[in-house]
Image 1 (tube, rainbow, N blue to C red):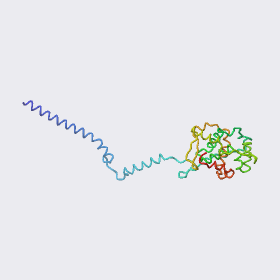
Image 2: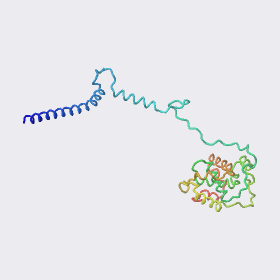
Image 3: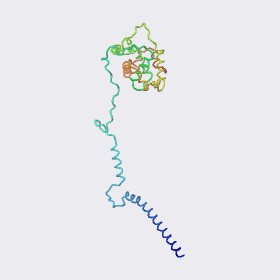
Image 4: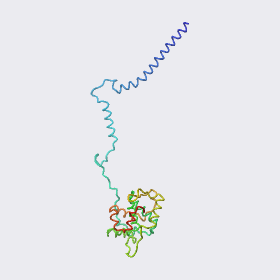
Length: 259
């Protein structure tokens, strides 16, 4: 019986030792974060009242970092100076250096010519182009003598020199083609739409045309020169300077809601 009582006493001592050991481990685990917290509060060493508060130090460091990552202004411009917008409009080429007939073409005015002319116009414009202006520019490329009638005398002479006979005005007794019922033009547009070469946005007077990437494979070599001149003149003077030279049926075609 004595041996049994001694064994129970030893078990109780062991239980107390194990409990104290667990408490010591728990206290040790809390000691590290408590120590760090005191360190951040400055409670581990004597404090100097002259030191700046930690909140001000952190604010100053954040401001210094923001200044370090701020983009630097170009060397040739002051930091507070507004950027100067460069003129990205293409320079007017000196067409007087081109040989006579540089833009002459024996290509018939069929749907393939209409596709090439419209593609050249939209390439020269370089961004979504109002549909009425695109139609006008393409028609002037396809029928260059219409553009001749709208140009001042000196420019008309230069235009005729580069384009050739197709730009010279017809005798009054010869009738010209009626563009508004020109079947190749309508067929050209339908095929461009079917292939996805023509990107259309909006309708009517607010509609615009642009080229899809696939359209840049169209051969426009015979039309790029004409398109560049017509588009440049259109940008500089607007449609108002060209429409008076057109007949009523052409003006109606240009402003039509559907080509």
